[in-house]
Each structure stands twice: as structure tokens, then as C-alpha cells.
Image (tube, rainbow, N blue to C red; front, top):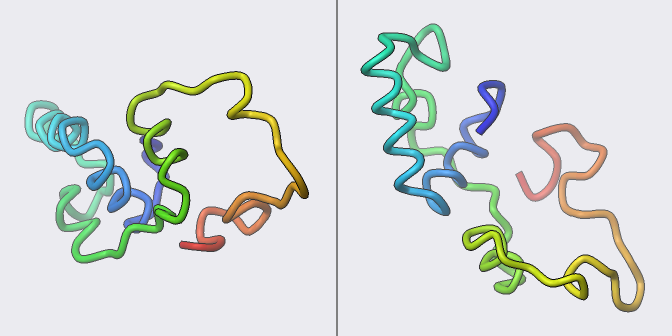
Length: 94
């Protein structure tokens, strides 16, 4: 949860990690300090569409649970750059 993330990335965090997102909002209230100096987190994210790619459920499950095996990190077949690689934070599918 980098403070330099975009609304689309925070929308993904809100979807995958709702409890942590709520804790981050709570931190803003307690600290009286917003991640964006113009608005609170909910306003910053607004109705942004999450850029989380759901085409590979096993990857989503690994993201949410933090569980993966050694076999999960090795490419099988032709390896391709991950979505968003080398395009900055607004890369595909964002």
C-alpha cells in the first residue's frame, strides 16, 4: 500500500484486502493526515475501477492468502511480461 499508488491500485486493495483498507482509513482519522493532501482515501479512490486482473484465480488466491509453492513461481511454457510491466503504475491492465 504505497502512498504513491493511484486510485485504480487502491481500488484493487479495497477489493482484495477490505480489512486493511479500513485500517488505513482509520489511520488517516487518528493521525489527521491524509495520503493525498487534498482529500481522504475514499474520496481519492472514488469510483475508480480496480486494475486487479482476475483471469488467473490461483494468483488472486496467492495474493490474498500469501500462500504459494516453489512451483508457483516458475514459468511453465512461454513466459510473458506480467500485466503492467515496464509501463509504470498505469500499465496494463490498469
